[in-house]
Image 1: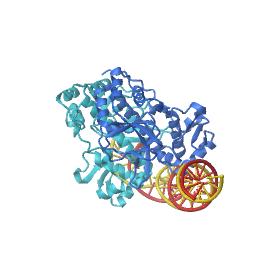
Image 2: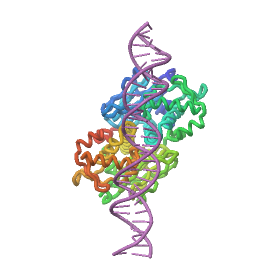
Image 3: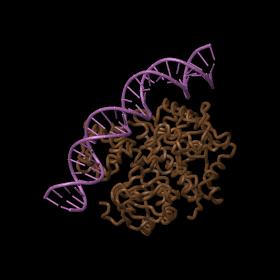
Image 4: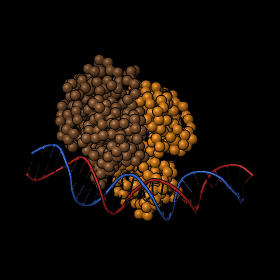
Length: 248
Length: 248
DNA sequence: CGAGCAGTTGATATCGTTCAACTGGTGTGG
DNA sequence: CCACACCAGTTGAACGATATCAACTGCTCG
């Protein structure tokens, strides 16, 4: 598990995934103070309208970005996985425009925003890596907007399953299966459907022989057909993005 | 009109909106080469999967970001107005994940991506301003995802009208009205509805006395009730964002 | 053992789509 | 200057996907 490593190591390697770092960069990252913190499931890390002073780097557990309508309906904008920052945009936007909520119980390393700002500006390679992270996140939101706006229910749910299969590091191991860290209600809030309809949709994906389920464990039975049914093209995750050689 | 000014002036003031610039910053922006270019309505500035080498700064006209499903359905992700860059994320993501398409006839100043990269990294204040622009854009996409996923048709269309009233500089002048630079089909593609349903929805907004229309000109009749009906809260546009005093 | 919550299922209601026809501007060529 | 074509907008009727409401099942935890 990711938590076996020291938080600073996890942070360094998460950033080094995006941009090539030199020793000074690594030292600067390690020098940044942080505080380990725990959040229970369903608690808020960040609230819409708030002016956060800290930014959480997720060590273990899952969180969501979400917004609420005035009527109280929830739209999940995206899922946050271990190794991701909860709210990098708050580096330069003082007021938050959405909520970040723990989906499961969560372990995070909390950094002060001024420290992160200073790191980003004093070590341009690191700043660039953080910038890229916000860009990839934005790309995921765009794809999910297409998903919700222009695909039918079955395709939407299948697409979400494919996204998780792509993003979860443990998926693909052990028999092409993985554990969805959320309820059907939460799937619905992510893809703009009702929990009831998500349920029927999952059943149909099973009936069509694309997936198999036992509780929240999803096994991909026919990967190729599932990807096609989901209209899934992983380019939006920007995995092929070359590691930048920072050139000033 | 914005085109009365020299392109470099427009660019400088657009960036200075976000971050305080010193004389060296301004000089660096002005020193960046660009090429004036025209696009006809409906032509593509940028294609999904492409590896653009230029980035367009819009001087006049309107464009959209959009993505297509495999079936060919279009989702409009957001509208680009004069004074905005077409594709700043391409500064650090080599492959584009969506299309940018001219909505009307368009005049742009086209910059080479390496020049923009160099500007962003050599003048950190400028880089910060560009970063902030990408963050604000991402915020708009999130709000529109909530709009599509969790609001009914009438609210969605009303929300789009409110967003345009907020963003168009000429709106609010001349009798609280403005010209929507798009067809009802395009409104539908932006809010996840059919052109037919958009039409009925607009008629109902008229029937309820919230707006009046003559062709594409929209006059806001009852601003307060329209905002309420649209569930519109302008915070997501980050207008209150203080102009950053860049501090290294 | 009981409470509570996620999941499941059925019946009905509704919002939005689809298809099709028609209107009315606008621009173009004869 | 008229005729025509074209396209955005408008309207009606029927259909369908998804929501809503309600009941029931079966974990899991205290």
